[in-house]
Length: 58
Image (cartoon, rainbow, N blue to C red; front, top):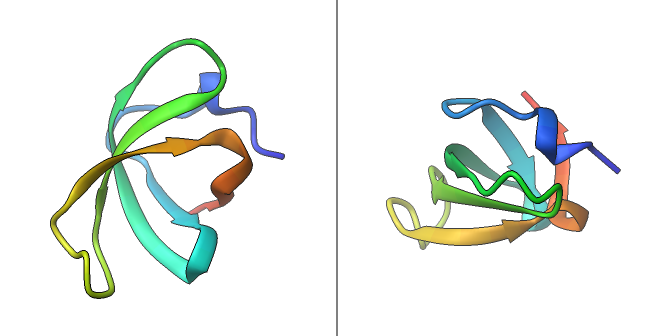
């Protein structure tokens, strides 16, 4: 599992489902990131992403 407390705003991620996302806020709790989806049907949407859904920091 990725340590999300170390992930910077602006970082690009690969998340569950093989989607690409950009970090727009790190909640600082070691569990949650607010991201903007950059691929797929939900492209442009903002959502919370749990640490267990982060597959890779691109």
